[in-house]
Amino acid sequence: MNYLKKIILFFAFSFPLLAQVNSPYSRLGIGELEFSYSARRAGMGGLGVAMDDNAFISMLNPAAWHSINLTRVEFATYFNGSFVSDQTQKSYYSGGYFSGFAFALPVSKQHGIAISMGLVPLSKIAYESNVKATDYTFNYSGDGGLSKVFLGTSYTLPLDINIGASLDYNFGTFAYNSSLSFPANSSANSSFKSEYKVKGLGGTIGVISQNLNGTLFRSEKIRDVRFGAAVSFISKIAADTSFTKIGRYVTDTLSQGITSLSIPPKITVGASAKLNARTQIYADYLFQNWADYTVSGNANDNLQNLSKVSLGIEYKNSEQAFSLSDLIIWRGGFSYGTTPYKIKGVSINEFSASCGVSLPLSRENYIDLSLQYILRGSTDSGLLKENILKLGASLSLGELWFVRQNF
Image (cartoon, rainbow, N blue to C red; front, side, top):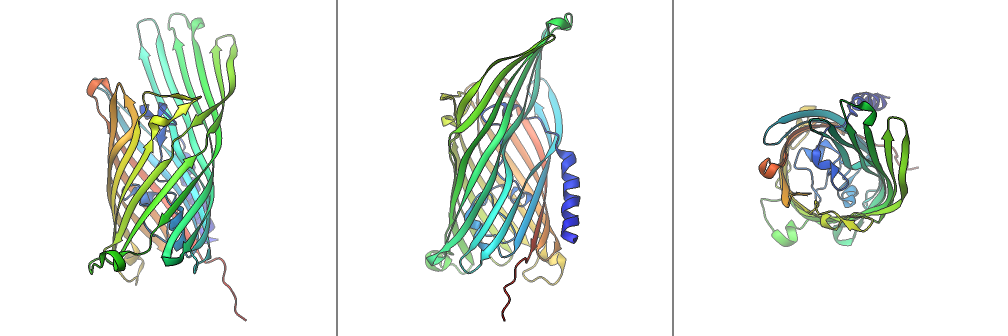
């Protein structure tokens, strides 16, 4: 019952934060991409494809589930504050959103078999802008995004090579609105709405190597070194489209039909190392060829290849746990790369710095907190710059559900 109360309180905290924030770049592609649903990874750079963590359900690499030794349930939420500026003005937007949940069940610790499922966002669309002239005003806005429901498993092969895979069902709605208003003649006001309701299958496969320190590096200063890789792919997504005109006296659906979206695969490779019982570091590289993204076979000149380098460190208060304060875990990280966006031929780059902490509720239960600073774009060439502060909170609960009885 105590765990149930914690879950209810967490949802009570999360649901008031469903208002979306504004990112002008989210009108391109499938929106602003999400890399980590949890504050645990967000606090150390956002990736970690080769990290083994038995107190975390990785969305990046299902092979990491092999180390889970308790039934785990996780929930997460984020709150954003964003300053968007150009060469002449600056605006502030804020809001938050529930960023998903995951469940994992260990089946065989000996063989590294665990089953996991959950619901997490892949992208979000949230923007508002307007252009004012003497006699009229153009307003543009968008909302929605892409999410996935997943079900997968992990397994440990001979030589301690860990693999994992998940089947994903991707779904969502992309809504784009535009309106034209005339202050002097409101009867001439009109608005238009384009909407894509999308759905399709995909998957993620991953691998994490054995500890290579003894066979490859043979360093006395490092306890554990592993390499990892993961590929996430989405088959062609079917999109039920509609284009609607809304006037003062009539609403008319001008066109509708089925089209398709082609989303490129996401590839992540990296390495992790445990320097000692208290300190772990990682380095990752992520690539996704968004120049190949198409809608009805048509590419978008404002999209480019995404690449991201991420570095992170994790530090535990104590090697042995005699009290709850010994279980506190501190994190920090950086990332830098190109976003999928290219405006007027100029690449939109992104830098982020993050920190975080895991606060234990008990030996196997944590509240994870993270704080990220994200700098995206610039005001050069008439573009937009975003300065974003992103606060994350996630709850990770672990409990032994099934015990085999010996008679």
